[in-house]
Image (cartoon, rainbow, N blue to C red; front, side, top):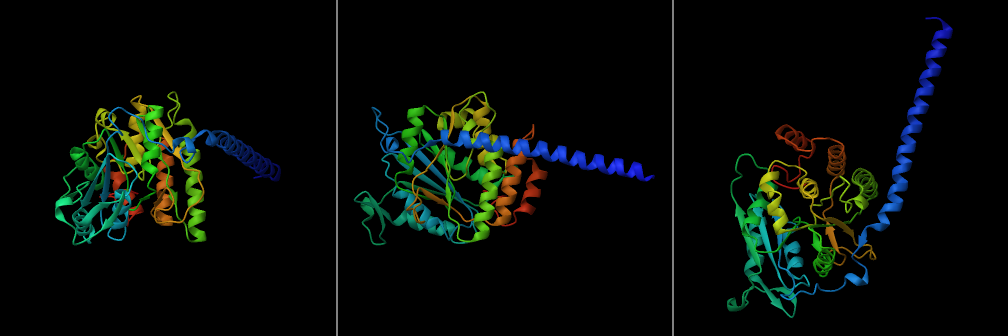
Length: 350
C-alpha cells in the first residue's frame, strides 16, 4: 500500500474516532443534564409533610410485609425485630424460609414464638405469658421448589396467597427499617393515589472499593432507568427495588401476581415494568434526610453487596432496559447463576 493511501486511511480512522467520541460525550452530557434537572423532582418523604398518618374512616390501610429468606441467619432476627417495631398500627409480617440450610427457619420460629408488644416497642422474652403472645408475625417454611420457578419468586408468591393486606410490601431479609418508614410511605402512597411505590434504600459502605462500586452502580442505574420519569404515564421508564416494593393487592392480582414472573431473575424491576405497562400509577421516592448510623437508625439499610454482584446487577438491569424483550428465560438464569454464584438466585434476590 502506498504511503499516501496509508496516511489517508489513518487520518480517516482518527477522524471517525473523534466523531464517535464526540457523539458519545454529547449523549452522556445530555443524560447528566437530564439527571441534574430531573432528580430533584423525585419526592422526598423525609420532609415534614409526610410525617403523618393517612386519615381514613376505617383507620390505616392494612399492609402485608413479605420477607423471603434463604440462608440469612446472620440478618433475619434483627430484620424481623425491626419490622415488628414499625410505627404503624395495621400490618402483618409474613416471613418465608425458602429451603435454608442454616438456622434461618429456626430463628424465624423463635422470633414468632417469643416476641411481645410492650409499650409500642418490641422486646424478646423467652418466659413471656403465652396468653398475650403476639401473632403479627407468620412464618412459612418451603421444603421443595416446584419446577418452573425461581426460589425467590416462588417464596413471594406463596406468601402472597396468605396475605390479608390491602397493600403488599415486598422486602429483603437483610433490610432494616426506621420505625416511621412504612407510615411515611403509606401517607405518600395514599395521598398520591399511587398503585406502586418504590423507596430507595441507603447502602452502608465501609471500604473505599465499595464506595467506588456503589457510585458506578448508581450512575448506571440512574442513567438507565431515569427515576424522575417513572411518574410520567407516557414514559416507558419504570422502577422496582427489592428492598421496598409497595403495591396495592388489587394491582398485584391484576398483573398476574408473581406466578407471571416465576422465572424472572431481576424480579423487582420486572414487577415495576409490568405494573407500569398495565397503566397503573407508579411512584418512586427518596429519603433525603441526614445520614444516620446503621442498624435501623436510618430509614433502612440494604445488605452490603459484593463488587461482583453489584456490577452484574447494574449491567443486567441497564441492558434489560435497552432491550425490546425483557424476559429472562432459563438460559439467562443459568448465566446469571454463574455470574452471581453466592446470590439467593435459584432462590432469591440479586
